[in-house]
Image (cartoon, rainbow, N blue to C red):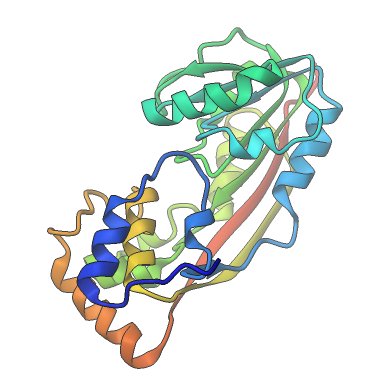
Length: 258
């Protein structure tokens, strides 16, 4: 059955403001927004690596949805998450598969021993803690991650907060990832970047996106940004979908053997 989408500005905003933003399930956006997917297929590639691992760690697992998509998990599998609502969701989803989900703030040291894992994965970490990743990897171990690239969805961000300085736009440049990996003692095996088309078909999708991806416009609330939301709604109504571009990095780094 097709859902009837409310069309007034007030109804669209109220609906999006009331929807849960737990986990990394983006099914709510169906029919409301689209995002081109990277060509490398991270979930599939992650699953292939997990199937061959002995002990693995998934960092900032969110609600555990991506990790749960892997057909086969290694004998030892752990995941970390820092947001309490996601912790509950990830534990419920992953514990039946033998995954130990550990509460760990994003900026805290990883609560695991040196060299504990031969594979560390992470999809869209807020920030990659390269020294901690290197520490918990065993010699010869691999870090495999899909990350947010530079100036991702910057067209939308700058609608709300204005033009961003180049230092902010380039903060997640792939050259920085390569340098940080090397500084932590890791060899970069693969590093790719893609720019991908994103479309928002109504203002409700924008509200839900900014509530869910909280680092895009820090401190976002509907009341705080009501004028910008209204002007963007009018633009979408007059011109059609708002188009932005996300950037994604595929990162694969390896810890050298002695």
